[in-house]
Length: 307
Length: 283
Image (cartoon, rainbow over all chains, first blue to last red; front, side, top):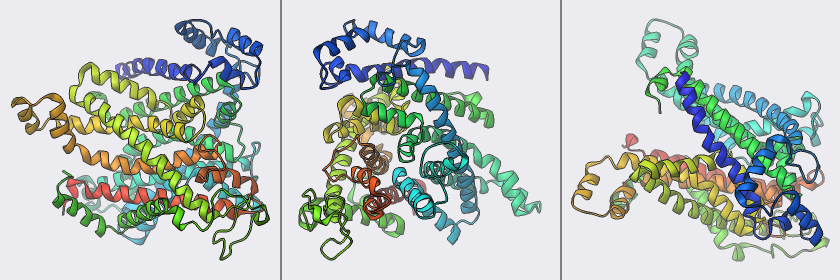
């Protein structure tokens, strides 16, 4: 297991370097003079020259890239809008996004696994059809529109829940429901199909033949194995939630990293855009690694066959 | 293998017997029809403003009412289908072309070519969901062309991976070895023997990707980083309608429903196609 982990960690190095290179290129590949792009269209020649000096844009590209990497972690990379080191701004926002994403994934897993299991156990009944259609609706609903509908009903019409911002637990409910719905749909479909596969296995027939009640067969014998592929999907969904947070946070004015990214793009705060992208991508990569490891723990065959 | 008329008929037969997939197909056809015939179907100019009719309710003249500038919502939805379909066709086209090319040479040649291409794909895949498209739009600036490029690039890794996987399986077949043995060149082996037999998963991916791409384009529009107003892109329409959610919720309702129905259509159809093209489920 130790070797497996070390191998996977080593493979992350080029990916993370590549990610930082992509983020670095965002300014370099913009059409026109990067300093002009950062300073904005109305900037004077002196402003542009100042930006060029400040960000070392006169240096050769490899030097600039190295300075960017160092700046990310040393605090030398400063946001244009906040005039503070980017990490000081990104990390608290990241915490808020993680709160939202975690709550969403909990909702999605509870709802998705329950629906998937019911669907599989009651295959080809109206429960199964209803669950399939609901899951497809969940997946197809644009998260920002679904968020607006929830807001319209629960905040505007019924006035039960706040329509935006962050503070109490009540603030968390609507955004996490909006964000978690599509993941719930995907998890439900995955659970259904893996549960159906498992229910066909001989050992389930044996368990039933032994005279165990259906709920024990399903709950204890089938679900454990059926959840292995579901775990991977849950991990991948967590990454998707980080991305989906961009839209949900905008709808509900949630002060997370997604909203920070969008406002930074709109206000041309390029150092902030770069830092946010690197941090979110790095987090996503590490979550995927964690999922792979969890998968290896749950299914020992993976460890021995490797990849 | 999907290509011969007989197998096409077989696949269509299976889709017709699957009510959900068939519904998906009908939705897609309706949507394409809307996009193609928008100028004929739309009762009004989608961009011309008439402030006297600001937030006009649903009526015979304006079947879906009017938005804040008095523009006919139905006409905007119809022309919006055009924009969405354009984005879908071109961005998925770019991704399909580049992704299948990269995936095919990666899977066929293996070795360092495979390693190199797949590591680059890993880097692109490290940006979850909409993020890569967002980054590219941030770089190029928001407009229709850049949106198509951004969404195209963001979809390349999916096609590359699927094609590679499929090619890896197909190239084990004896007819591929035979084709190489009789002296066919490598490009010819890939184009004539490998790809046609590796096509099923690519077709399924194309359909499902159409759904994702529409959601991404609308999402970027909603964030103000997609097609810019006054163009009637559905996500952009939702973004402005959001400001009037309390006073005129219907203005936000229709663009959202349109996105959802079309995405459902592609997902229904893609799902059915998956079953129809799956040899294990042959009847």
